[in-house]
Length: 251
Image (cartoon, rainbow, N blue to C red):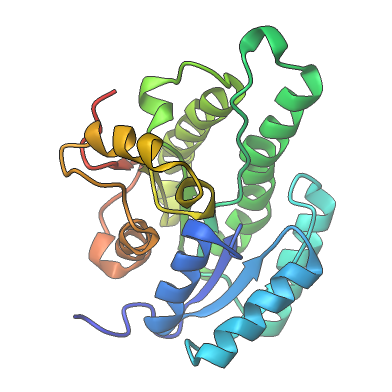
């Protein structure tokens, strides 16, 4: 395996305390990056850092917990990171929330909550980091989309709507920021073995696996591998892509 693909890089990963986000943090640390992970609560972020340090995954990891939909707070946090580390090379916008309520039961508050974290927070983080990346001569932004951004889903309209927006933001920023050597891409994972999925009954898991030609759901590390590729110089000419990592799921 190639090692140290991200040696000397400084990476910010939102939603980095569990699931795919935590797998991304581990992968980046293993490949030599200094990682600042964002969690929804200070205690969660700090506990994740302690766990990573105890595992020996990497010593260059810090936890923070800004409110991601508050631009002023996000900007202040990014400036603290730049003051401490000198730069931000990689931004991974992974934080997100989902709900599967029927459209007839969907509330305005539910829709706003999903849009705030899945779309507005992504805008805030990109807006706070992009000028700094431009100053330093370039950078890399990777957004977490979803396979439902390509196909929709039969309930929970807010989540696919937000992920369609993520794809639009990704492709548009790639075109606008490319001249500043800032690459912007997205990863659209399929069903992945996170805590939420792992707790589902066996019959539901079996139905999910049956819809995937590979016959199984993804491991978080398999999704993180694609983020690593996009963050590294191996993807130096990949810009504006929405990479599906869903095992060719049949929808």
